[in-house]
Each structure stands twice: as C-alpha cells, then as structure tokens.
Image 1 (cartoon, rainbow, N blue to C red):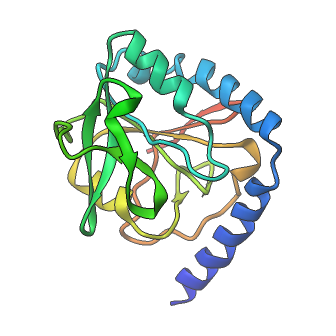
Image 2 (image 1 turned 180 degrees about the horizontal axis):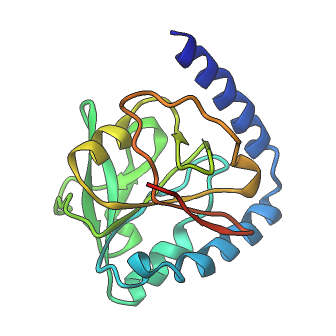
Length: 187
C-alpha cells in the first residue's frame, strides 16, 4: 500500500506543478512537442495512431490530431467502456462527444480498432526510464498489457522525475517527448 500512497502524493504534486503552467507556455510547449514527435520514426511512419483529447493542463493535442487527419493518417481516440478503454477511429472533431470524466471521446458509431501502430499516452509524470505516472485508473496500463504498441509520452520537461515507484502492472513507455528533448527509454 506504501507504493500507492507514494504515487498518490507524487501525482498530486506533479498535477499542481503542471496546473500552474500558463496557457501561453503550454501552447509553446505543445507546438515544440508536435514538431519533435515527427522525428520519431515509429510516429512518422505510422498509419494508425492513437491520440488522446487533452483535459486540464495536459499537452494540447488538437493540432496534432488535425495535422494527422490532414495527412490522411488514421486517428483513434480512447473511449472508456466499463473498466477498460478501446480506441475508435475519428475523421473529424465532430466525431467526438463528452464522455467519462468529462473527456471528449469518440461517439458510439465510430469504428473500434485497437491494433494501432503508435499511441500518444497522457502523462502526469514519468521517469527517464519510462515508468509513467497517470491518473491512477490504470486504463492505459490494462490496454497496453493486451496490445503491443509503440508508446510515446508527451509531457512537460518539469514532469520528468528521477524516480517513480513501479507497480508490477505498469507498462514502460518507449519514448518521452518534452518541449526540450526526446528520450528513447532503455528496454
């Protein structure tokens, strides 16, 4: 249980830190990250890409989604179904509606496909080794345990922390992209 308490207090600290980032700074960081992820071969050459719609102080992904759609890539966003998430294809922003946790999700009519090439994973905090701290619901870890997909965490530089307690169900992230750098984690 110590692990969960430690993770919870770290999560709260990192969310507070991220929430205190100005809109202008988030916009600049998001634009830099959008340019950087294109340098990752797995992302650049992917045809089916999982992306999330941002909430709160998360990196803005709307421009990434728009750019991918404009390039003719297949874009999939997560939808919460019970205790799990599944990815559904969108072709425009009007395919989204307010879903669980007040997050924009694909509508029921959008086609499910969990066989993606690469996935952008929302991140509260992450260690340089790729141990990710999410919101604590475990949706992404459950999904990634069942679907082997290249993962990219897009996050602010200040959300990288030296050490995050790793639980046995935690999936290690392949790439970390911040406004300042790109890290390929060691497997």
